[in-house]
Length: 348
Image (tube, rainbow, N blue to C red):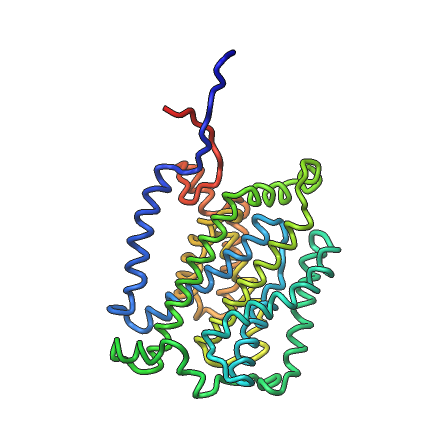
C-alpha cells in the first residue's frame, strides 16, 4: 500500500513572526506611554485607538461580511447614551457600564437586522442609515439625559474606576488621570478587537464568512449557513462599536444626540479609513487611521476644503489602488503582517 503524503497547514510567515515580536515591544511601550508622554499626545493616541477600533469593526462587517452599513453611528450613540444613562440613573461606575454600552447596541441591532437583512446592496446601506436617524430622534426625546441639548457626566461619576490610583501614582490632576485611564482602556479594546478578528478569520467560521462575502449562493451550496454568519457578524460588530462609543464619550464627559449620532464622525470617516488603508485586511485600517490622523492634523483648519480633499483622496485611491494602500504595499513586497491565507507544506 502506497504511503500517503502528509501535509501541514500553515498561515504564519517570516514577516508575521517578526511583526509579532515588534508588536510585543510596541505594546510594552504603549502601556508605559503615560509615564513620559504629554497629555496632548495621550489624547491623540486615544483618538487613533478608538477610531481604529471602529474601523476594524466596520471592516469586519463590510470587508469580510459583505454588509456595507452606513448606520454604525447608531451603535456609537447608543453605547454612549447607555453609559451616561447607567451613570446618571443608577449611579453605576462608568467603566463597569461599558459592557452595558455593548449590550444596548446589541438590543437595538436585533430588530435592525430583521429589517435590514431583507434589503440588498445599496438598499441595505440606506436602510441602516434610516434606522440610525430614527434612533437619534428617539434618543433626543430622552429628557433624563438632556434631550436634544445633551448633558454631562455627573461630577461624582467622573472619578471612575482607576482615576484615584493614577492621580496618586503619576502625581497628575484628575482630568489628566481620566485621560490616562481611558487611554489604557482604548488600548485594551483595540488589542482585543484586532486579536479577536484575527482569531476569527483563522477559524472555519472565517472561511465561511469569506465564502458568504464572495458568493453567497456558492457558500450555501457547500453547507455554509449564510444567514447565521451575517447575524453573528452584525451583532458582534454592534457590540464592539457600542463599547467603543461608550468609551469615546466617557473620555469626552459630555454628550448630545447630534454629536453621538454623527454620520460624518462615526461612519463617513471610518469608511474613509478602511477604504484608504485597504478593505478586507486587518493591516488596512491600521494604515488608514494613521493617514487619516495626519490629514486631520494638517488639513482640519481648511474648513470645507478638508472634506473635499478627503473625498478626492478616497476617489484617487479607489481608482489607482482598489485594494487600498496596504494592498499596494502587500502586492509589491508580498508582506503579510496578519496572514490568514492557508498554505500546504510537507514536513521536513
